[in-house]
Image 1 (cartoon, chains in turn brown, cyan):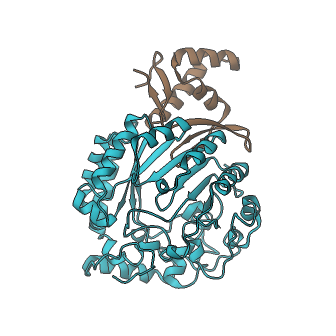
Image 2: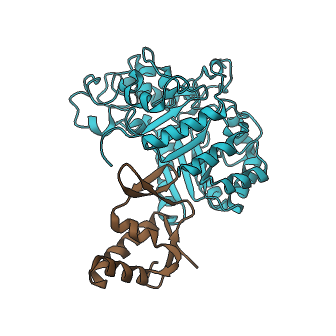
Image 3: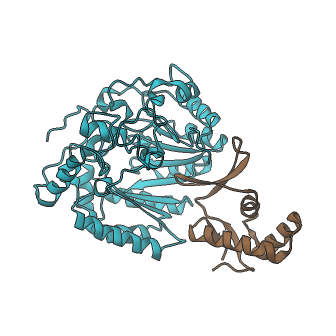
Length: 92
Length: 365
């Protein structure tokens, strides 16, 4: 279960790539790919296994000029979806 | 994703050579007539041209891609181009050192096929002794830090052991399990009577797969590729003709799918003669079934025409003789009775002997 103090990284099968045609980041994994919106890309680029979800939320709240709690729900929902799909993992 | 044609995936069929002789091989039955293989330089150019067109996924396949001694060069170039590269292999012939080298060069994923969960039945489908070796190679894949996809093609002889397939995938710590019901093209079509399962077998397998998907959520992605013979709606074959995929055959033919060159009256170009981008945009073979203007009834006025694109052109041709016809899997097809008859045979008929893949194109046992 993902919580504020979880440290996450991309699953070993997943890789980010910038797509020139759409000017967006894509998350690529076997035979599939997701085209990411700006927030999703910002979150996943920070899932390097070193930082807690809370600190990622804090940084993005500052970047977007929004309240912490407003960003928190969006980020948590997104990360839980990604974890269910096996695309991000908690670092033990 | 926008709706205009953009290839996201290049399927590079590097060779038709293979140590296995699987009875459902997707290679064309006349593959033996196409034994010329492109050289390394040409493949490297194809990778660059594909990436330039928008391709982000590369499947290295065949035949058995490991029989090419230039996989290292192709993997390195794919990594330089930032392609997500998946090696689709039987795992034979492979040394651990070579696999480790692939890892250093940036290969992203390894997909190994397992024909069944027991050596005798697996080797019987593959027409060669290979099962034990595959398990060893799957172990190396994980030890070296690769993600592992396990692929099992399902049919009437192994469908009842789908629980064991799931257990084997768990034991091998697969990251992804593809439970792919046989697609009845290539060598699977002449073997259809021996491969097509009964509805009861299929429904049970579907439940097992659904349970596994729930239970393993987050640790193993479980895919169950529905067999279209038991649906009444066709699938969007290749996500639509020449919309998302390019396949290049060992001798250089650029195609919208594995079997497009078995359709009569279409012209496909070789990447040795024309740049891939020209072929993708303009060649008559790629244009033939793009959009909707080629459709006949019942597809032409169907609500689902932009969802399933009329199904599989190759299946339509090989079963009805008309490539532009509705896929006979569709309950609205005038030829749907052909599918119902095949199901009835599976229910009551004699399974029949296997025809093994062979270079002579011999399809009688």
